[in-house]
Image (cartoon, rainbow, N blue to C red):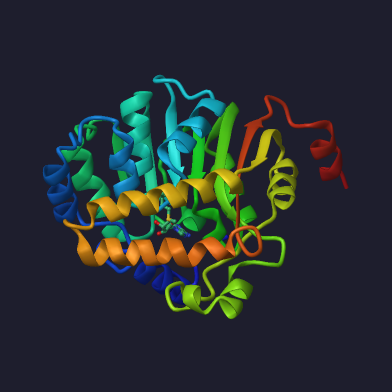
Length: 298
Ligand SMILES: C[S@@+](CC[C@H](N)C(=O)[O-])C[C@H]1O[C@@H](n2cnc3c(N)ncnc32)[C@H](O)[C@@H]1O
């Protein structure tokens, strides 16, 4: 696909940077939260993930994705759009694999690197400032690749995935959690109709697919889709639980917590109509499928 348009990059950077209104907490804010609530950052306590991540999926859902991908400690894993490293830290702690995470937001990557030390996983994770559309990974090869709530921001998903597939061994698994189009359209349409959400979310950063489109893309790229499911009910319920948790920690991060709670409340009415969530797991075929090789003939 090539590098993302600089305006898109800037919008995403403002939206997701650590300490920004809707971005993840900074390392300093997190250290205060761990202290205040007696959370051991070296543990795999789900509250850590829910406090740190930029995602709407909760830790149990992320771990379900990893199980569906058959992750094992021996695997080399690539993470696309890794953000501040919350997802790879869970993977490194609970499964023990080695993870390479890429994200084009240098501030998120800096956070990921410092939090890896705090969480005691620095030996198992590495983070690179890179655009998924222009990856430069040297001789690295991977057995597993995941994209956790990031593909909805890639205008050219096919171009990016084509390059990624060159890095995967035959039989490798691809796991995706993503924000999908809703029944009435995508979030740009939703922002026109939901003023509370439009005050918080920018336009022009949403390139959502439907679940079937995502599966179709993976099949076209020669992957075999082994699982595809809509997770909207589960994420909707999870966000409502997170609202309750944010109320509980608001003593430490008052402004941030209030902003996060406002964002969750504002996004709930978009669920189903303009935003669904999905999980897809696919396997790279050991041999190119007959249809793929046939279609390449002149
Ligand atoms: C919603 S956040 C999810 C972060 C992380 N995967 C998680 O679940 O906590 C989306 C992430 O995708 C990254 N991203 C979007 N487009 C990208 C691109 N073209 N190249 C690299 N990273 C990108 C953003 O910087 C952001 O960190």
